[in-house]
Structure formats: structure tokens, C-alpha cells
Image 1 (cartoon, helix red, strand yellow):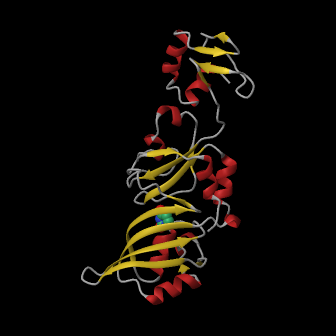
Image 2 (tube, rainbow, N blue to C red):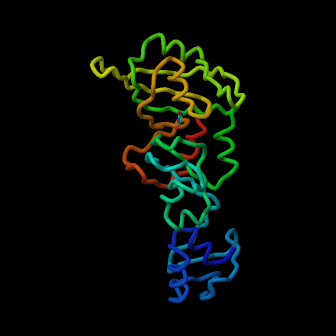
Image 3 (tube, helix red, strand yellow):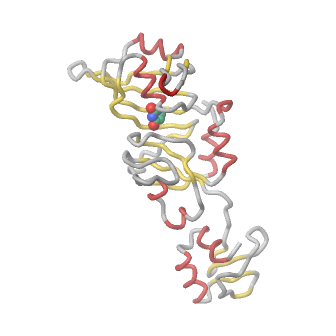
Length: 247
Ligand code: URA
């Protein structure tokens, strides 16, 4: 890999910033000062220093984002801003992609990575990675709804597209509070699959509407409460492992 790409990928700023480091003779490869940005290095074998800091190359990045409403969880879109537009140049250049999707109006926990194998494992239906959402519902969520969710509600297929109805896997529904005057409820729901608009369609099936939706947990990884909407941070190795862990 080119030395400028490796350093930009390792958090030493943009390629332009890295050029400056090279020009200022701060980059040393195997004991030799390097000024050529196009020099190819072996990131696994070569001893690379910037000043007195040894460069530890990490093959993959794992980011935890608190997705805001209004942005699309895709890598490109002609109309809307995407979650990739919220990344720094250095992180964007690592070519991450969102692990699964949240609707444009859904907020909360979104993982971005360039590790295809990890993403595949998280999304594989067989792995049953639990996803927990907090939602505000138009209507009073009842014991009957909790029972229906625990047995598996029927998600209506779009008949005009030839889609069949689908029985959702059992889901855990907890009522956090109800407001009798407003006729709204705050709930948490845990699902093990990721069908299109799944939570919204599950509530539709019991005659209710989701007004606000936020993902708060994936596997055993909980959304960082310190992370403002639209912000993101790297996950530690231990946190990455939590995604695939079960309670
Ligand atoms: N279920 C939905 O309906 N929307 C989301 O964004 C995620 C789960």
C-alpha cells in the first residue's frame, strides 16, 4: 500500500496532511526517512514511525453512529444526504458501509464498517442478532399486543408487487409508559430479523402507528448515550465482539 494512503488510513489526517509530514521528514520506514508519498510499504512487515510514534495499521474500521433522522443509511443517494456524508475524510477513505439499514426517519445505533465478513455475520438470519428499538406509538399498547408480538404478528405483503404476507418471528415488547390523554405509548421492542420497515409494520398489524423510532441496541452493544445525534466514534475490539454476543 502507498505510504500516504496507509498514514491517512491510520489517523494521520488527509493525504494533504500526510504530504506535509513527509515533506517535514517526519516519516521513517525501517529506519530510513521517507519523502515520497507514492512509496509502497508492507503494512504488516515494515516498521513505520511518524516522529517517535509507531504506526499500527488496522485493516478494518468499526464505527458506531447515532444516526439522525433525514439521512439515508446507504453509501450513495441522488437526493438525500447519506450516513457516509457525516464521516471525516480519513474515515470515508476507508470505504465503510452501513451494516443493515435504518429508515430515513429512524434514529439511533448504526454500525459502519469495511469488514464484509463481520457485516455478513451480523446480518445473517441464522445468527439472530437481537435489535432493540425504543418507539413512541400513536395508541395505547395493550397486553393483547404484547401477546401478539410474542407469538409473531402478520406483516402485510404489498399485493400489487406480488408480495405474500409474512409471519414475523416472536418479538419482545415492553410498555415503558402510556399517556391516556394523548393516547400514546412509549415502548421497547426486540426483534431478531430485519424485514423492510419491520417495526412500523408490526405495529400496523395491531392497528397502531409508530410516531418515533430509535434503535438502541444490537446484540449486547448499547447505543452510547454520550454520542449526540449525527456523531460517531470507533468501536473498541470488545464492543465489536458485543454485537455478535447474546444475553
Ligand atoms: N423497523 C422499521 O420500521 N424501521 C427501521 O428503520 C428499523 C426497523
